[in-house]
Structure formats: structure tokens, C-alpha cells
Image (cartoon, rainbow, N blue to C red):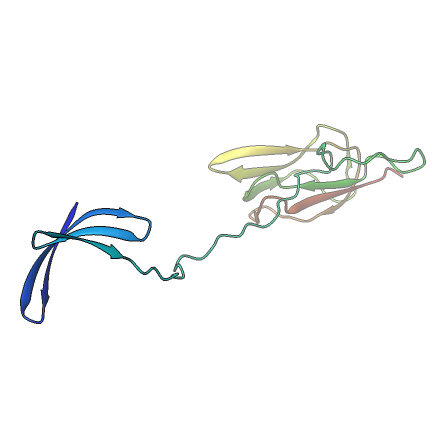
Length: 149
């Protein structure tokens, strides 16, 4: 129960809010109980709505996005994406390097921990999109892997 003191036109009122349900308030003014209808207006909030972008899987081997390949297509091509936001500490591969599944590609610092980003594909490094010191977000493209030739 909340208590208020009002001064309206020189008159003093002691008001106790007894109960509020939906838009009906039961108030006691100087000992007399009244039921008061509250008019509510829709107020726009000052806090902006947080809208997050769609996060893509860290690699193309995510079960929900895996597609079967044709027997004639090249194997091992694809991209390596950042699994979480952080800073690149060390890049261990260069364009043209031959890599196998499990090879260390780079080291990513996130939340004060070092994370080894390893390859889940075999092939040749076609492009390295980051350098040591770069900040990345989750899903950012780090390395492009192409076909052995």
C-alpha cells in the first residue's frame, strides 16, 4: 500500500492506494474509499530494441547446412569462419600452403583464452583474410581453402 499527500487548491488530502487491478485502482482519500479508473497511454520505451544478425555456422560442415556433393566435384574446398568474436594472435598458414584435416590454421584470443582454429578440410590455402592483431566477429571469414592441383 502506497501513501501520498496531495495539496489541491489549498486543501490537503491523505491518499492511500489500497489495490490496483488492471486499470481500476482502489484508493482511500481522507478515510473514504473510492474506485478510480486509470487511463493508460502507450508510452514508447527509451531503450532501443536489440536486433541480432543471423549468425552463420563457423564452418560449412555444420549438420544443418551440409549438402551432398556430386562424385565429379572437387573435395576439400570451402571456408573457415570464426567460431566466436576475438582477436587473431597468430596466423600459421600462408596462401599456397597444403593443409590436411586437423592442421592448425591460426590462433584466436577470445575472453582471455587462446583458441586453436584447425582445418576441417583438405586442400590448398587459396586466401587468408586476416592478419595477426585483427579483430573478428563470430562468423567472419578467416581462410578460404581450394582444391589440390
